[in-house]
Image (cartoon, rainbow, N blue to C red; front, side, top):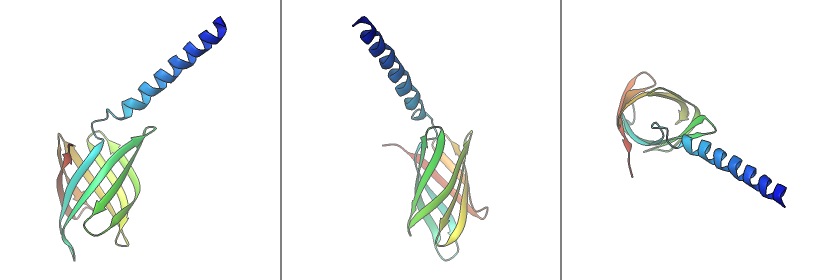
Length: 122
């Protein structure tokens, strides 16, 4: 009986530590929802987009929605305050190279179109 209790305590402690580690992913200040505008994109004009930056098991992912359609994201990297996303939209390969300062976002879409925006808070 005593050994069963000891096993339950050890398993409980392990589970508790594991849960704490998972929660640390949610404290990453880069995670969240961002609204951005890519300016003067040929054929489309100013393109408004929303993307969510997520992290699971130490790996960043993003999903992007814009005025026109869902964007298929292939790669997401975060280094310091920089977010780099490779994706396909309207049958074109595109990439975002963004810098986050506080809640402000600036950068470029495919090195050609200026992007500005902000992190959203619920």
